Image (cartoon, rainbow, N blue to C red; front, side, top):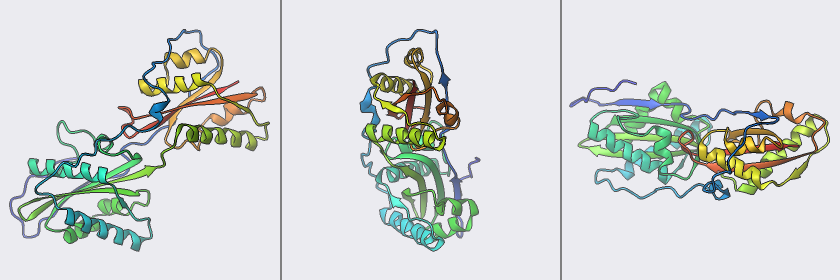
Length: 309
């Protein structure tokens, strides 16, 4: 997206950019392995079940002498007033997302221009992941330059794409950052959809329930659920490698039919799972799972290994 030139004077200044829709959407990936002749190494010990909980985020409050917290609160009230009138859920202000928004607003002030990403700056998902523990599956951003909260919000609502971000019913959290330069305000609104955070047992129970439901819908006998620690190790090896195929997965495939995938919605099996689970020869299954934030999934994703026997 192009960058506007810095405008020194204007009778009624308003500039705005937006980054809309999803900045990261997870695509389900299936890999069905009936067997493998390749050998494998032991999964790395550094990626164990503890990775199922997000690491503590860096949320230190970086002070800005020119920040405008009162304006941020006004923007939140105006956004939620518009959402209430539109009949969509209200936004919850998140301190981490607000910190990311303030940092980016300061970057725009220093560059004297609006942009969603300056040279050397992380992407929006990476910026948000650095300062919040939230697990997000959608992100969006509005940036603007105006004189006060009321006019800033009014001008954003007059722009269909910016309005779509403000009224997107999928978003449930927001971060607001405003910094002042003279009589002008650099405004950043960072939106996201925060998902539930599951423990290891909760995560595996959700996957197991989806397996049981799939078998019931196919009118097939319920499978015996087993607990295989090596399946957790294989899932964590994928998380550490940031990919589905790892030596630990290939080694496990020597003994089981496997389904490997990553997901933000463990209650739903990936496309193609029904065919694999429809076999009448199956007797048991196990679920291995691991949560991790990776380069590909900066705000986190669940890595799952489903063994079928």
